[in-house]
Image 1 (cartoon, helix red, strand yellow):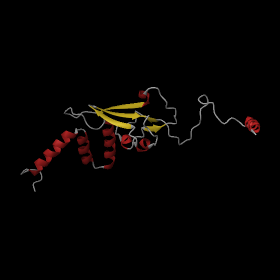
Image 2: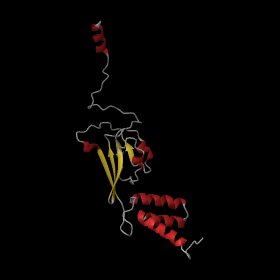
Image 3: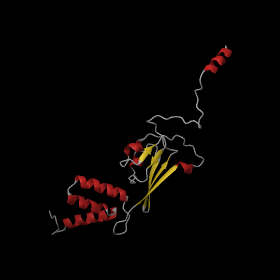
Image 4: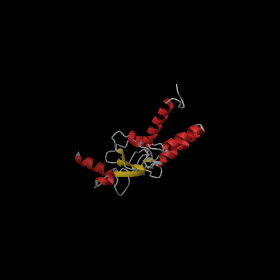
Length: 179
């Protein structure tokens, strides 16, 4: 019986490929290595907010926002790609992810944070501010847009101080709104 099986198997075609010399075709909807398109990324961190295994981290250092992807932790779910407002995250068809060093599996993007007129760092990247301004200009009245844009160019503590100052002024006798 085993001789029959050997003869029969010799008539069959080879079903394996000579990998890695002969590449294996991947399906169209294959989700492989995650790539950041640095020229499109505005550093908002939307990708990190939806990443189930926390493979993407947003780290704030003085004057810099760092977006770090650790591919070794990624489960290739594609949520980062779906939620990126700038379409700066892409999944490629690359599935050969082995590496000798851990650092080879890290992707790091750095975005500088601009300063306000007092020298304080803003909590948004320049690209985030520009994108928000474009959206605001297309959907809001001009005077409101100008106030919002002016406010976006100030750090959080300055905006809070100005807000508290305007409330205090309004509550003083003879202020703008005395009730």
